[in-house]
Amino acid sequence: MSSKIYSVITGTGSYIPTQKVKNEAFLENEFYGADQQKLKKSNQQIIEKLEEITTIRERRYVKDHLVTSDIAYFAARDAITSSGVDAETLDYIIVAHNFGDVKHNSQRIDLVPTLAARVKHKLGIKNPATVAYDLPFGCPGWLQGLIQADYYIKSGDAQKILVIGAEVLSRVIDSHDMDSMLYSDGAGATLLEARESEEPTGILAHSTRSDTYLYSEMLYMGPSYKPESKKSRNIFLKMHGRKLYQYALETVPQAIKSCLEKSNTPIEKIKKVLIHQANGKMDDAILKRLYALYGINTPPEGVMPMTIDTLGNSSVATVPTLLDLILKNQMEPHHLQKGDLVVFASVGAGMNINAAVYRM
Picture (tube, rainbow, N blue to C red):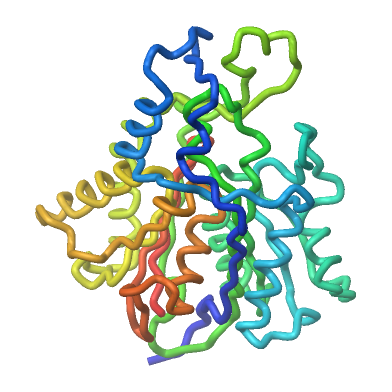
């Protein structure tokens, strides 16, 4: 059997903000609907319903002095350390995010220079051949960065690539919109290296789709729901939650199945499904629909580790953070060993969906 070049993860890192924000923190908020009418239910009822639907009990926010490029750097440094790679030998640094650096008490998005350039600077990398660029792709951004890295490595263009997903959503949410309770801050990083192997390893297959014709405005930026805020020019992260939920259930399972078929991987061989932590109940429903496509009524117990109940939805950071926690034995009883098959999957603004099959 002839050997091939594969993209293999040799290091992971993450940054989980230290500021815990429990559901009770929203008891004093004034919540309005999209029609700018004050919600009739009490905040206690709203919060209880949110937890029932999403499983979120608390989320993490960064401290006031930190911005997205800071926490991206923390996760990157962690991944480089765990890999043992000399940062000067990196061919690419890809940073997935959606809002750039938004400072405390400001809504201004800061993207110049790119976050990737800032991370490279913070890492102290002098090598001009280390190409640094940003990737805005909604919540699937980190995984799309992984897919791009795989193309670079398979083409022979690169040997070592750092892919980071980082976001500070706490500064782009409308405190008068109950959906604001979904979002959190965080960063995760992955270092990929080229590895020659006769046996398939690392990234075995991947797939991506963009449904922009009908679904481009499922997630969007818009004014606050509070009537008096209409005079303000500030815009906030908004979504059509119910439509998005249905879209995800109809499309994500099939997208994952297509990726499994692409790599000739039976679903029974999958050890873990690491899916974007968007909504606990939604992810459960996606998993059930995925296995139902194979005639399996009940997914294997423990196949889908979850962090959303305590970490919330940190967009591009959820999947790499989840992977890092598992590999560093911080997600008991979940573990991954050499040879285990893993599915990565995400869905988000665009609407974009991607999936990858990975052999540890």
